[in-house]
Image (tube, rainbow, N blue to C red; front, side):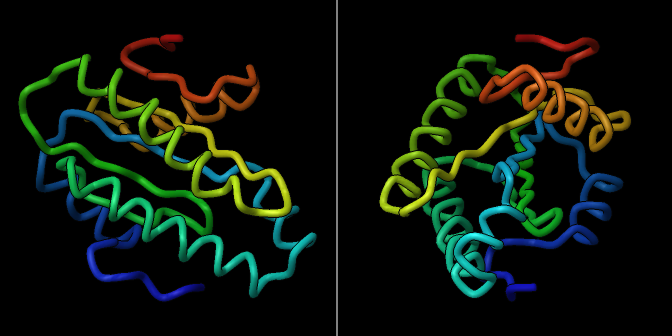
Length: 152
């Protein structure tokens, strides 16, 4: 697995942080069909794409207040720790994030897309954000939020 750039934490860090610190929202970002991408362009080139993606997340976060974690190979968490919940923030951030991902990968010879699941609840947050992500993928949505129930 690629080494994590400075400023991006791992799954263990996320587990510790979720237990000790509260949050307003978590966003799970998954690069769609990344195994197939690795097969098409090779693992080394796939690693370059992941490295570019992690750098993009850090740049995106310069104007935001998320903690960034690599959850698994092509899955990343953005955890918002600002205590003030403002739906407008997520309505602005998520399209900006998705547009940035689209722009980042527009130079690639193959189509690369991402899906985002969002959770605003602290209890079982990782399970709920994964449910939102899977729901979004199954229903061909770019993102879905889970907050007591699935939102579209």
